[in-house]
Image (tube, rainbow, N blue to C red; front, side, top):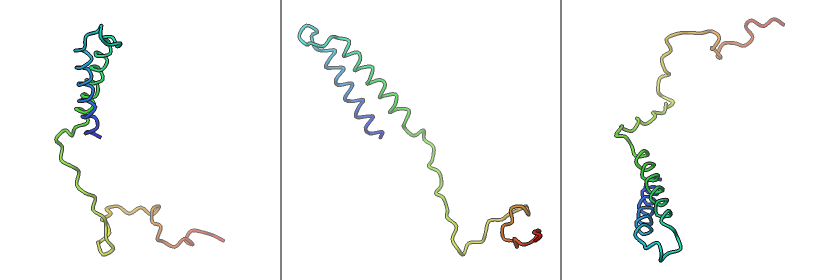
Length: 93
């Protein structure tokens, strides 16, 4: 997407340069179209510039747990979240 924005910057700057350099009496378009194209060029330049990476390193890749890896360490036991215990405990029929 960044390359598309940069290409748009170049296209709009070229179009603005052409429209601002053409004699206004020769073309049907007024000089305001050149300024409008220049505005679009600056807008796309700002979008391209802000979308560039700010020099931060990429995040580390997510490490998936494998079947033979030990389970994660739990420092607290909460009985409400123990889904492995017998479900019949505490029920009266």
